[in-house]
Image 1 (cartoon, helix red, strand yellow):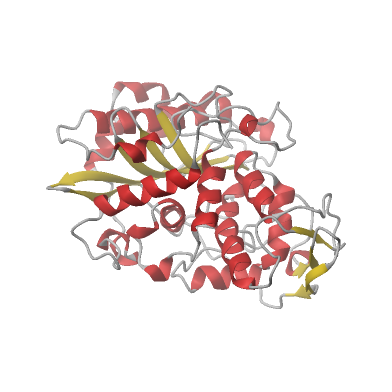
Image 2 (cartoon, helix red, strand yellow):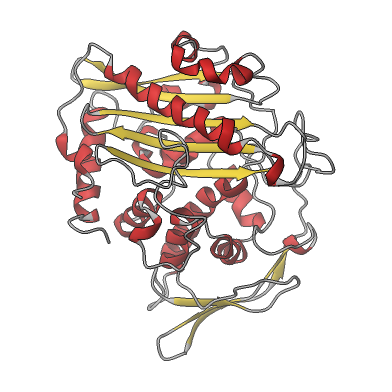
Length: 415
């Protein structure tokens, strides 16, 4: 835990902020902008004007050919409406049926569903800190455990650990993941394969047995190995984006659904209860900690060449190895693979008391190669995303309306 930081207090402050923010709307109803049929269909003037700022002149290669770069942006801003903050959606080139590879962003729905499942087990001794391990399965896996759900949730966000994801993937199964998304109205999202283990799509339908154990080594719960017979497929535009890559059976999350999933994680009161996840205070606190903690502030083992400072903060920070400036808080998940860079984040500027929800994806693989060395992440994609986040927050600071005075929410970190 970070020095001087109380996540119990953070949860209390966040609830107060949400209560004030949605005051005037029914406490049990989502704001209408989050209905599936109300996503904006045309580019917003706000985002068009933002992207025309001189700070974006170095990125004309992207902005003059946004189709080639698969650029999609979805933003929720909060504008003052009397004594409330009214959420308003803005989009740029939103394409729900256009394929992009979400990469590690699939860890977000898996985290939400795994936390919910642990709560529902209802067996004494099984909780976020109970040791669990996988039995050897049908394809080679590097780390079967032991681990804990708490540790793996933190590792999936703070250092984007794929082995942690693979354990939770077997714990849930792709059928339960897809069913959990469908029942909440996420109609296109699917998570269909492991990330660390090199398994065939058929092997990804086979799930390791899972054992939860007491500190004395007693088996508290055994989840038997099993197989999914259902084949989940995508029928989307542009799935041949990389030479030799077939996205038909691969994982997918559309930008609108990813935006709603991030909302479900950080501001669930904006959504109908049917689209949220039944997380208790402990689980919510863990998730918020995982989405915001720097790698070096954990006790995880990780390669400092890959993870340091803001390497998992693309918006505002551009994947920098520097620490996040104290005036910002960012709760997010990123994905990077096959030339796609994606970030879905709650951005908070605590000095100006402005907040934005932003989801963006960008493609910078001109060679259409599966080799990361051929992709323009560092020289183009990440600088663009940093500038986008910075200019979005700057645009909020330029507004004339006064932010709501709920200081506690913007003091989540007391570094």
